[in-house]
Length: 294
Length: 241
Image (cartoon, rainbow over all chains, first blue to last red; front, top):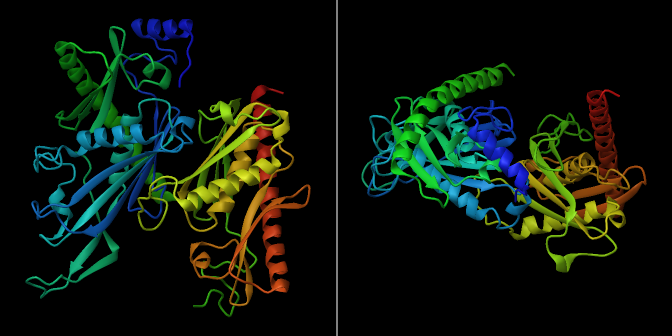
């Protein structure tokens, strides 16, 4: 865990109060983002995102599966996060499981929405990836997307970094085109032919980014480092898409937050998300260009 | 199946005694005391070293030497088919143990009594020879952490398929069912610290196959030495010496 002396704690808190943090940033400034795509050749899509000393990898794997009986016209998406012990010795053995689970659930909530059907991916109008586009044969075959996140190095703000990595990995993803043999009907399983040349790309312009606002003292900051996170009273993670819609929200930390502050945080997150989205999009484009070159 | 073509080329176009391309990078994890990435062809692993530091579990503390611990984990996306295995299955426990024993043999543990050194290796991509890649990455990470070592232990695998000794097997060759010899080697002391083989092999052929793996280890050691020298030069340059 972070071991800080009283003086260091005061320094961090005082810096945040004066809008000048330990690393010279302002309260609402992100660390520089560095994106690398196509890092895992075996996956359908992958990306590595570095945010200061935080380093995460996301990969997307597509497998053919069977749609859920209640939603025969939709594919399935699952997000799993794993915290590697390389990031911190406390993740050794089963030590990282709790955090992994917390991050997985928060990402599911922020990016996919809940099971109730009101979630982000389910509403066709604003969906980043419409689940319907993952269906191959209605009620029989669909694509299951497995999104795996891996925390390689941790210096705070894992959720935002993982969100960005997943967005980058999805834009890097190619789903093979599937040809269904004609004539199959009734109860028999249709025969499919998975193309290894033609790939469908996702339109990821609608995938939201996650902004975590960490409350330290009376102020809140974005992109907190581990040291700053150790001083937080509570944190609110808000996922916002290109249109400025709130797609999901999670509050962590013990202390209560005044409702008016939460509304204030949301409007700030909306404002910050525009910059982050632009920065991330240009980084992703640059990474893809680099990948195509090599 | 034919693993070596009549022209003497392997499935991935290598000669029998050719290694895959190796690449190492020091300092991949900012927060660790020492870290490195090591690639052997498509196999890619990250190693991070924490320590020497206070022993976490007091009952494990040793008064005459340091405690060395190691954990090996594979990322869900590292293999061709996505896998979801619980942590600490038998295979990874065994590999953790192998890496720990190999590294323990070369760390000068008697210099750091009552302390603990943690080595964490994470496989990002598995394409055969993860054991070797992990040991090489761990060596680099230990060197980066500045932990005193007797020698730079390196590892390489070799096998025997189609009556040919092959160096540095990839996944396809590894799963062919032939013998797979993994050697850990101390190049300066000229000593073998790790030797594993499955399947049977006549004694005279085994000698050749093991010799081939040792040659591979020496090649890796040369590369690692160059890499560390280059890294030290960079550090020197940054300090303005």
